Image 1 (spheres, helix red, strand yellow):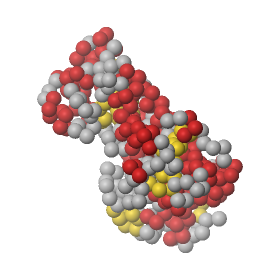
Image 2: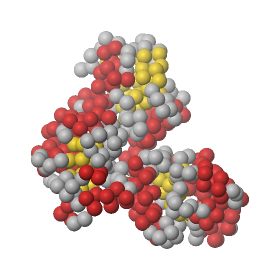
Image 3: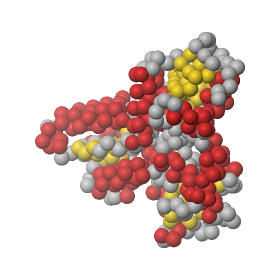
Image 4: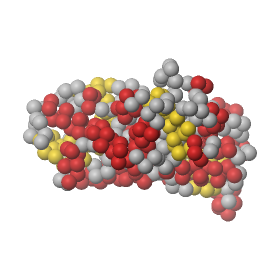
Length: 398
């Protein structure tokens, strides 16, 4: 793909599209809260914002590139391979701009119908190597919004594969980012990967390293999370750890340490040192949002915590996990419409796949409400949530 048909620096149109982006996603109320100690009192409700929340640099960049692309090519068909970020409102806005989705949600958009006259956006998560090959074959213009933190993980995974190490990736095997990352291990002959969701799955892999086991049963257990031809008796004996950038940092580090210990138990410390590699590739924005929520929960007694973001957003789900671990009634809501009333809220439970409803979620009388949001949530949505909660108590925040 020639440089002229591959763009990963934008089009320099930020001043042209800036006002439109601000109208769609910014919030004067949130800006005032940020300037006032991240708190807002409205009647008998006090809202406390975590000091890091919402859109990160990578998300801002992806959205700006999408708007710039539509501005740059007003007369061309513009597509995107899938959700640009995990936020239904943002993806809906791109659809409003005439950007069509190639993930199957639009029956009129298909990879095999792309031509050299089309423009295709790559989302912040990146895309698998095979998808890039399809776009290269079609000859279309590609605008790449892949986050720099994701690119950093890819570099490590490719290095592992080149040096004969299996990439052990902490993440969700069905997540767009993890699929793209895992595909990088296959760029080199003999490259392999294993994706583990959590410490429980890591322990299964570690136990196999230490004691051996039934290779067929292992492959069946990780059927969708291993590279083709994966042989645990070979591929688990040289490991390089990486992660989906939105996982819990502490868990990623613990998984890496558990795998290192397994190799030490199997081969001894000296030989294990040459069989194990690890790099902390959690993105800084993810870590900052997790740390900021931890600081808020340590500093304030909250009656309830609202975590705002797409239900398929990993970094948002981990914020829910942190709130629940601290013993605070915590609700992961997708947007303001989930606040049904002062007595009822729709939310997705931790590890749940569907919304549920909870009644009596908001205490009567004075209440301290914590608010945070995943990296795919615009400030405008945070404002809508705060105003909707307050209005159900007959309060209109200034």
